[in-house]
Length: 258
Image (cartoon, rainbow, N blue to C red; front, side, top):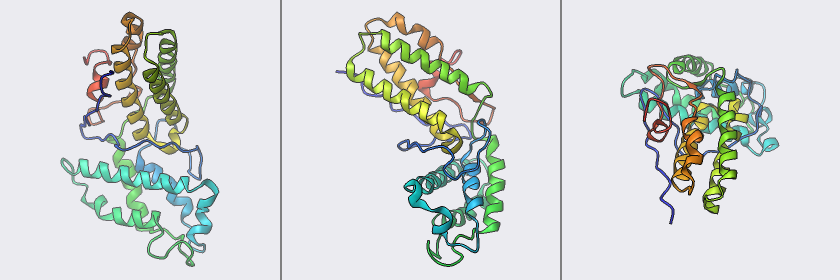
């Protein structure tokens, strides 16, 4: 019987790791692109709401949700959830009341409330709320982890190491091997779709990979084979004093933190 999958604690220092199941979306589903290193949820939501703001059209005409099976709309809701969680956490140490007061306006814009999807002018977005969202996007730059310029390449290189190691180690139980492959695949999707999914999903995927690597190594009949994978773990985010820190599982793999 295999040990249970690690339940990762939310190790937060003025930042937040998004909880909940991870969902991938196609890139460029109606969202303006940002540089790969920039992806906090307020910026990503702002990038969706701006092109949606067309006062002379209906919300349905502007967003055309059926074209992508509502993926863009669902993505906006996920960004709302991330913003809400960030503001809740930050409220313990920072005054974010002005942003919390405007959260309901952002939610109303996302759901086209109260006009509805087909009412004339329902695509119009509250411009005052949009300006506060833009201010929040800038404010969150100090609290949300961002990929280093070399972070994507480093992480993809590490993933290749994990993939080759698990394929070479025939002692790994079949179900655990399948699980690790699924975890790796999800992380790669988060990298591919980073511009729309954002840093929260990628960090959560990396947390999951760390826990799965530890579990897989512990179940290996050839633990020395996993030493390069354990020693070579990378943290692709630029972490400042205020940014989110790695979780306990990551701390076991990051140099100088074990």
